[in-house]
Length: 250
Image (cartoon, rainbow, N blue to C red):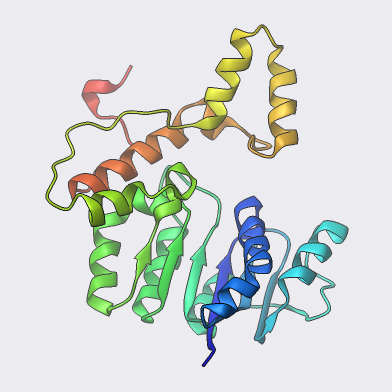
């Protein structure tokens, strides 16, 4: 018997569009496994919000956005509901939180996740802010409500680093966290080493899709700080935050 799982997607930038593409490309495999995924709502910061409890076609979503740049004339209709109203009243089984990172507070993603968990909805997020700022409380809330709170793709694009420590190495102690935490700055430094002009580097990175229009979160180190904090919070079971301590201020 096919099980229909309804999704509400908060944010529809590069990550969410890639996710929608995966749902399209993997539909047959998902159906073979007994699952039918149905997008019932999408919210965006500036392109309009959509809600349709019968489901929004992901192919239509992507093509319409590419052609029009927003959802205001989408055939299935825009809604006047705010993002929070959709989270509070929408019909979904899983909320996928993919709004832009706010490294300084973790909001509004923290409130999005908290509201969905309180409705006993599962949550999947690629947003590092909540994991950096409020992980332990949100984890405990999900456990209390008996729902899943998944965040694997917040660091290393879904490479199972959190699953590895939780599922594969449950009795091991993490002693050190080390690695390249930001691919954008790694790319910039590598190209600068070759002598490439900075503006040319940024243009090429944007063309490839991994350099943001405003790269300051990457180039000023905040993205790396969020990832490192998320890794520490999950690995050590404590609540740190991305702010530098007094001893590390310059």
